[in-house]
Image (tube, rainbow, N blue to C red; front, top):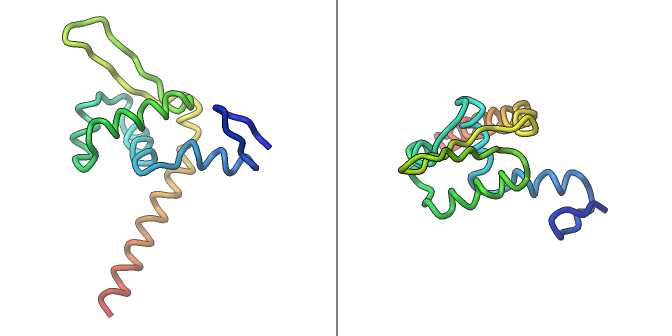
Length: 115
């Protein structure tokens, strides 16, 4: 058993899925793998279907789990950048595999729908 954030996970796999699971987390990580840093407004442009409250929640959870790092600049208006931590960058092969599988799966579904 693994204790983390007042929760108990039976295996490390369950812990990992808890950290990267969530409707937008893989997309956020993918975006940061392809951009050195992003601001909140840039995420909103990339993901117009997510509301700001949910986006901020997902970003905070990823920050708490040490997947991303938030830099706050002391300027007016406030400027905040998000970047991947080294732990977040370690997710590159996993996120790439998931995204590639998703592309292949979507293609398979398109083929089966056209029959």
